[in-house]
Image (cartoon, rainbow, N blue to C red; front, side, top):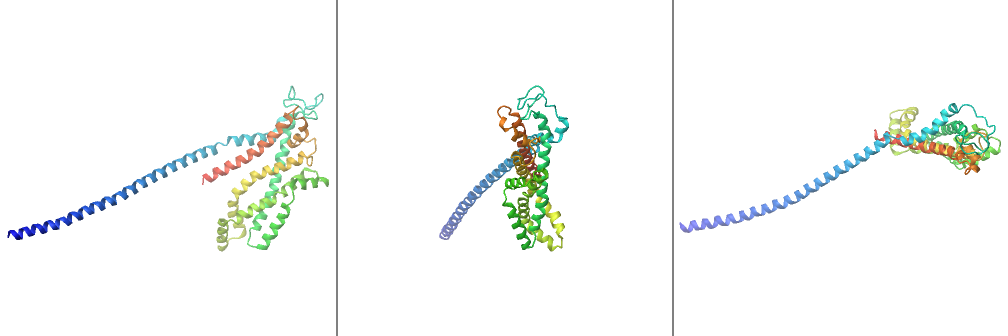
Length: 331
């Protein structure tokens, strides 16, 4: 009996030994499994904190940008001053002051807040009357380019390959002509009227506008939607005047802001070279050209109209960019 009890005890100990070993091994494996799990949890927590920090940084940057876009004071001031001078200047200036006894190229003084020009005329009166021709001519030329370029670009973006080639190759030919050379040729043939100048400046903008419209209309996203609308039986007017018009609004507005500067530069250069308006015109570009020789003796006659032209270009571009940026963030 004692022998059997001893054998049973030995067997029990032998059985308990492997169980303890297995328990120890399971504990080690559990600890080994728990270690990577803790590491993963720590890494996930760090990633979450990093994502939260990045989101906060983006929100702060968006808040700063939105705050800036809500207060485009610089753009409004830069654009508002020349526009108000062009619109309200003739009314505020009244009749032309008498030039009797006024000396040419005189600095600012009594009776002449900005001095006189090379012809003895009051510079302030000229500046207030010269903005209307600048603003009107630039807007009219831009309207001509947009009115002709947008339909041609949509026509070239249509399904007919031959029509696309015909339209774009013809516009490429027009694009090859330098703007000032065309205006000089026009002036040499006796067509110095302002209406000719505006019409030709507008026609010279057609190729660039048409290329922009065609590229935007042929973009992959727009192309897919257009094909889907055609499969639904939608007509040309619905696709182009409703769908593509909305898609082209933002790029056209951005291009119009930059193209306004191009048109203004072209018209001002033509007037500066004496190709457009007569030398007696109060146009700002004409004033710069007429008084450039007296820059050091009477700088106001040159710097004031030059500053208004610069403010008109820069302010218009800034306002368009801020408006479009705010519209994108509001979507």
